[in-house]
Length: 231
Image (cartoon, one colour):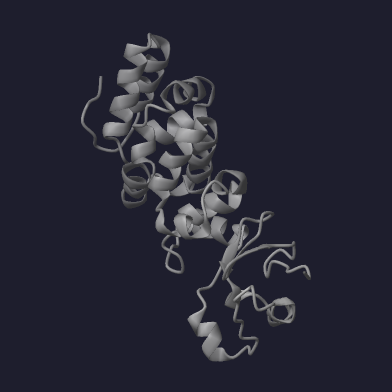
């Protein structure tokens, strides 16, 4: 069969039924979103046993019906600028693009049904270290907006909320917080302080990490945003 290439990065893609997936950049989509030349290759290679129907005609109507796919750099820009108007799932899609090996555990259809929180928690069950790296990528990319109460609540109170409370990552997260001052500031000096921070402090007490607990409390004391006192 002819090599079918990704419309975004140009690398070979895998064809699964009526969907394609790129193992290099993590992009995916329906057959109709491929370039016309690639769709033509598939049509030429199709056999009766394949049961695959492809329309090669590239019209403006087809463009409107096909959801736009974004590159990793485009997704990073959306999260960095915190403009999700073109893609409300930009956080999830950025993680899928940045961690294709982790995303490969699920089909394209399964991934499309997950939101960011579900993808992070599911990943944590298989690979807690990768889930923490995903957390750090989102926080680092959106860092300039963590002082915006609305954005901070969306990230820490929604997208990362369940992950922060997950027992799968807790010991590893505390280890990272010991050495990663940037991560500690992001979590404890953002405009959102609630259950995630409280649970982390409780874990410090339970696991005998008193020095870390005091470090995090000191950061919290310097948080200029109103919050309930945590101990």
